[in-house]
Structures are given as C-alpha cells and as structure tokens.
Length: 186
Image (cartoon, rainbow, N blue to C red; front, side, top):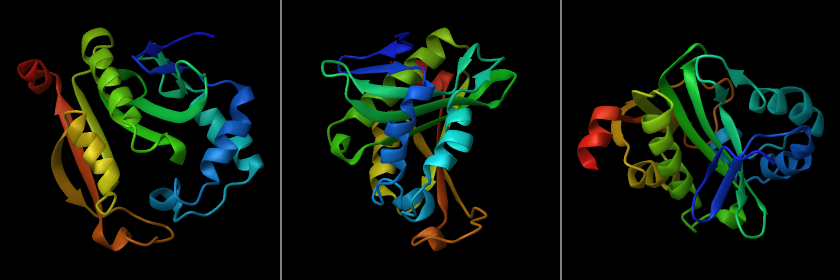
C-alpha cells in the first residue's frame, strides 16, 4: 500500500477499485450524507461509475490525487476519506479541503487530525498558497472541524441546490487559510 500521509492515528492512501464496498457503505449512511444529499441512498453503480473515478483522478499541477482513503493506523479500519484537491487542475495554489468519515469515526478527532496534517503538507511540500473549505451553514460539526484545523470563517453564500435539503435555506459557509496566516500562527 502506498501511503500519501501518515499521522499519529491515521494513514491516508490512494483509493483503489477495491474500495467500492467501503464507499458504498459510507455513502449509504443517511446521517453521513445528511448535509450532502439529504441522506438519500447512493447506488453501487453510481459509486463505481461516478464516485470512484472522481476519487481516482490525478491532478497534473498538483502531482498527486485530490482524494485520499483514510484508515485507522493500528487496525487498518476504513474511516472514510479526505479531499485535498486543487480548484484548478493545473495549479496547486488554491486547494479545497473536505472530509467524509464513517459515523463510528465521529467525535474522535480524526477529521481535525487529518485536516491539520493535510494543511501542513500542502503548505510545506505541495506549493499551496490558500486552502478553502465549504459546508452548509447548519453543519456545526463540520464547521467546528474547520475552525480547529485553523481555517477562519470567510463568508456565507447561497449555493445552487438542484434539490434543496433540510437546512439549505440557511445557505453555505466558506472558510479559508492562507500560507501567510498559517506561517504566522506557527
């Protein structure tokens, strides 16, 4: 197994075709998907033909993929995934941070730990200048992770929801962190 990043408790590795079952279980937990699609189930075919290809994509300007499978270091249990993807496929200056973890992994600090490690790697090794992250305004748990990882609230905005879900009427929020701000806080 190739390791992209390792923390005290987490290993981030590239996705493989063997991850379909993990992704199917993750995306079919209504609580996990509550702020993504209102908790609607995702078919195995959608995982295979749409989700997995997105997670396997390499970003030429980044020299890496943009999505990483997260495993618990000691047990190798699948925790979910982290997104650390350049907004411009050919330029690593601005990346989006995201995460989707199994419910069993919630409340244990994994999201913050993985986010902080990705932020550090981005600013020290990958040429990142700015990190952005978005969530629904009502997703207080995800907002707290962003804050604990060092990002600060930037704005509230209204997204284009093809099928509005509960809470979408309150809009979305964007958080960010620049390399300069990160370096000043260290």
